[in-house]
View 1 (cartoon, rainbow, N blue to C red):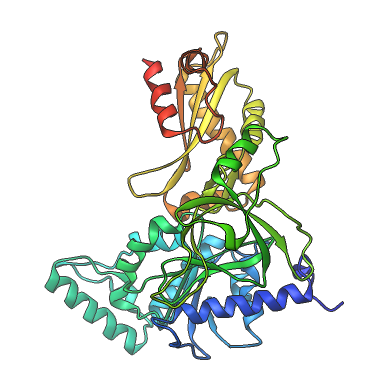
View 2 (tube, helix red, strand yellow; view 1 turned 90 degrees about the vertical axis):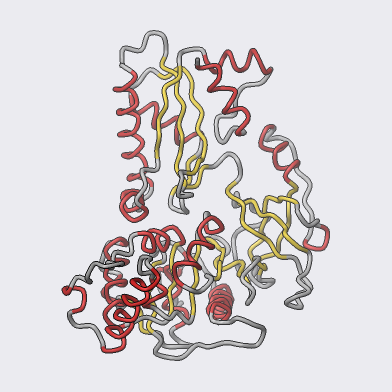
Length: 428
């Protein structure tokens, strides 16, 4: 009826559950122990989550009826800006007027933390950064400068900001959390969800494991061995287990049935979780807690922005016009734990392109593809400071030789690390 068009995928009941769960996560982000919360109306909140049509774009509107936060930048202004510019302006406003809460993609927060560029040591602070700052922020910056010089270390965001709540989302969050805690002086609370289930899981006050909200979905779990069988044989029906049937220290592919009007029944969103404990005696929680592992092996997810499959890479190779004999792709991490896609390709014997030209053309066509299917791809490189694609050319016949030696073809997407090593050995 009167539901805004941008909320069309969700029923009224789903929106109520979404609101309740994200407010619960927001409260938990301010908590250090059971029963302790600290949220006030008027808190200044830097909002660096993906905009609509992503589910996170609903967050500010949904909580508005319950608590009034001052978003940086203001929502009306933010929604008229590109995502990258929105995040930059919000952080600049936080430096000027302070901020109490931070909601963001973990990779973006990590990049902000790494590029925090107030001078340290014996250098001075750029006076232009001080113009218009509130007295409390000026005081915090002067104090941060003193601590930096005294301890002979760079100024950290936590020296300037005193966050009351810190929430991060993203498929690579586990890789960043320790560094984010060190940089900001507060451990972030991880939240998981998606467009189909909305807000599905949150950590508790101890911030060391995800708990699924019972009212968002009905959950089933496919053991890793069953998942791999079904990926190798699409006709295979994997077995599923309920929450009270799973085991600690095991990996599971998640299956969801969305409650309260959702259209997804026994749906496989493609996410893999590890059950880290069946209960948490320290927190008094008598239900399982999880950590997010990654997408299923047939999908390469880069920082929560891109979802690359065998079919999408085949399309890009076809569009490129380069005569490719074979290929495989893996998700990998650089020295700073930032994810990227490593693509190994073989030119056909008749290919007229040089190795260098082929590598360059493939990178260009993949970039075009991602920009077409994912509007945030260009921002991904700018915001995270990474080039999400690396192309390596293998001699013709390398992958066929691998199959002859080991008795099975190398997996197109996310082959094991051992198989990658063996493949590269055959290159020489």
